[in-house]
Image (tube, rainbow, N blue to C red; front, side, top):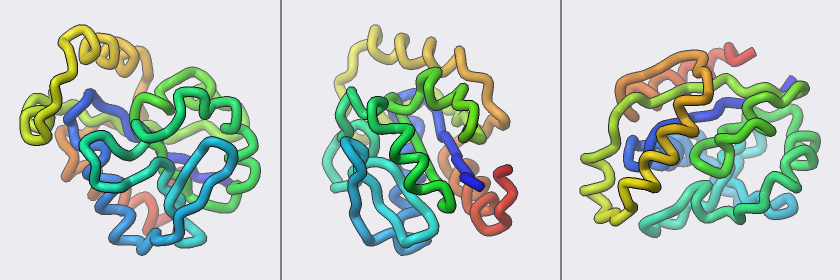
Amino acid sequence: MVRVILLIGVQGSGKTWVFKQLIQRYNCTAKKKIGKIRYHTNGEVIVAGKYDNSMFEGSDKLSMSIMSDYDLFMELNKINIILLEGDRFTNGRVVNHVEYPPYVIKITDDGREGRLKRGSNQSDETIKRMQSRINNIAPNIEVADSTKALELITNLINNYEVR
């Protein structure tokens, strides 16, 4: 059974920070690739994205055309816990997937502090577009900030309670 967790939130809300913490916590040191989807894994937990300490990392480093490889990625990793975050995965193909529906966690923080901290110069229009996309996804649960998201995802992984 696939356990898929999708973390959503506006730019700067801490999604990437959460996943970097999870990569460390679960020792996901192996870097792999299926089609256009790059990921980090420990053999059980998969963190999709390329985390390399650049300003924009995680799923932002993946091709915009990764969805063409999504079904193959899921099929080849069906015994793993799969963690997804960010813009590349906030679409109907992921959210409404029949075989592998995600457990959606939404960070409600407005992301201003995070964007300032990293020196992001994303336009208000870009931020509004992402907010609209996020608002169209019904989360299973909302959390106030990235620290709460990290705690929740850690508990879900440790207790295998995603599905």
